[in-house]
Length: 279
Length: 260
Image 1 (cartoon, chains in turn blue, cyan):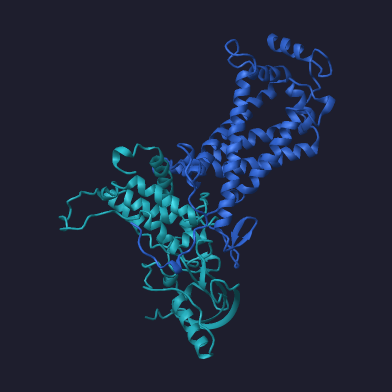
Image 2 (image 1 turned 30 degrees about the vertical axis):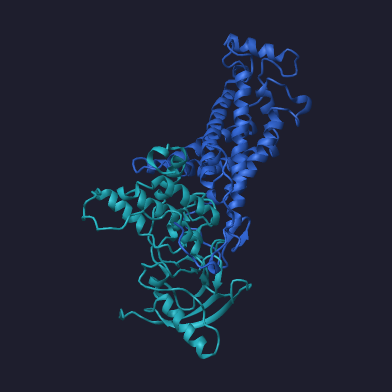
């Protein structure tokens, strides 16, 4: 049922329909579907960040409890599956979610950039000569494309810092997170880096946790008024929890002065385990 | 009709001039004295009169009904689609919104899907391509059916009407930092999907309209600028509705509803 249009006035499409992939991959071929993937992986990643923050609060119970918690992650479902299996499964899931989130974000950014070609682009976003005064778009929503890369770069730094121990060198003790965290965050520039990155993360979540409802079409007058509040609460809780670690390390609440098991000893992990048992 | 408080103000108009689709385009500045009772487009008419008298090319802009219901007019005024007044199309904007001595920057709606034809006139025909893809219901002609033969609940009719209020001006695309046409498309999908007459083609319509939309326009990041710019204040809820219906359309067993 194609209506006739004078070809002379036809605006050529910016992109043509591609051959469709087999279901359900064809959903990922479209921008609307890709936003679904962004939202679903976003939920998973927010879940991770929240659990990560809550788990890390064990640091306030001292080195032994912190070690016990780290060990418990490795022995999840212990006895049924080999040690570390569930942890690696979770890590793999995170990696896939992070990869999809990143890939859809980058491709959608380019997609929108090309769709604004006729306009003056500044920093990848459409600009008008008179200078837009954005009315609805908040600072958080407009900076998603900057807070995202900041978080990705920080994530790499964070893994290298506290998982692989690249920067701490000989000071890094695998399996003693309390020691590693207090060593790393005791340096003021690193504490500031963690604070800046976590503010970026909170801003990203502030828009993302609201936006995902719209992307997924979860929209109902019964709870629409709660969506903004939920996003603010999530961002706020994660921000406060995560900022407490660098701040309390700097102010001396997290320190190693009263450790029963010095991190310099060879059998530090066994000592921590015994101490945790004894509690 | 004079309100009694009308006054003459002097404004500086900085307007986009572009001699044709392939011309580079530039801004030009004009001074215009105008009564605050005049509409924005009447101000442009007067400016064009004086340009004609000087033997210069008048500024090309689009308008038709000038009562805010046809969607033909639409320019960016000081960086806002349809100007500073909320829920108002350019033709319904009056000069009383401006002060004496103001500089007013007038630009065409910008998006790769909206190439400039001349000056402030842009080609918004990609919106027609979206409608062609499914923004209708197929009714075999014949004797007109009885009125009220198909019952429509009042609430559904009200919601559908809110979506159908879309005049297709393209302000949503112009205001969107991503040049996405989600608000337009979702309004057109929404007003049919809410009514019994729209059900027969609901899933194929949603799928095809979204896919044609993505051939021309960007991807929604839920900024909400479109809703602020919309002269009919179409709700963002329709975008959520469309997002859900689109993925539903992909997953649904459409063989049994005869909608391949």
